[in-house]
Length: 403
Image (cartoon, rainbow, N blue to C red):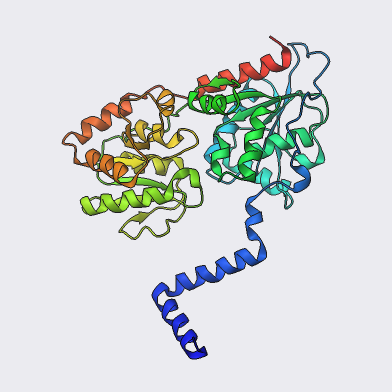
């Protein structure tokens, strides 16, 4: 191919893909050349454990039960609206309401701005009083330290060198966040570390047992039915809702796009509402709402008929929140997920575009939409996070004080 033909070919391709397509290709080349993918890996090489540790130092004797405990919690810096951080901070609140002192240890391999992180927590999770520290400065003066993700499990060994009780609050089977490579194995090894594991729901406990043969303390999933509830007065429902997270493989984005396209072909009269991160390549009419507050999200659930609630690493909190507002969740079917969400109003579907679209179609085609919405909401009335919080408090106190 001569020079002119090459330029012409490139110009034709640029015209086909448009300005956005050209920008994406330029960004992709820069991404590969600069090694920007490393930004997603939030552990410095010096902080990666070379192997599963054996015994770790623990206090020679437990504190007196009359003593107030100091509990450390290790996490990534939270972003507003983060569901995982919200669940974690509920547990922090529970320990503080019990009279214990909490410290939140945060980590960013690129350098942590403690003041900024503290401001974010105070603004978006004002119910907790915990001091915020950088874990790379060391873990000192705590009775227990709790990991909240696979990276933090490495960190509490690396920086928590004093005798301390170590626990692991697990919300997802995190090896499935990745392809089967280094990150998968680094996450999987944390379940074999000598920590007391607290698994959020039976599904997660089963996944860990199948991988390691080890059991965990299981605490129940919660749902804030005082916040998520049907609108009053009731609204005429129409359309469906989708939580968009294109960059998180566990959310099944590409499968969801196929499902939504098939659904739109069958029901072009039904509006598709999208919230969360901006959708990419959806290619059908939709209304994008961006990030929503809890009240705004409850309103959206309360005026739509059904929604996609997908996750492959644990049941998603979104499913029961939809139910509480009278929205019918369409959930990708995993056998162990039924143990966590045994609710007859959930519509389970094989994780294929066709199966998910079929369940969405059944939901919007029902002749008794309002009745189904009322029954779905009634099925979770009274549900809260209190049993979860009580169980976590009991486990941590038992681990530190002794049985």
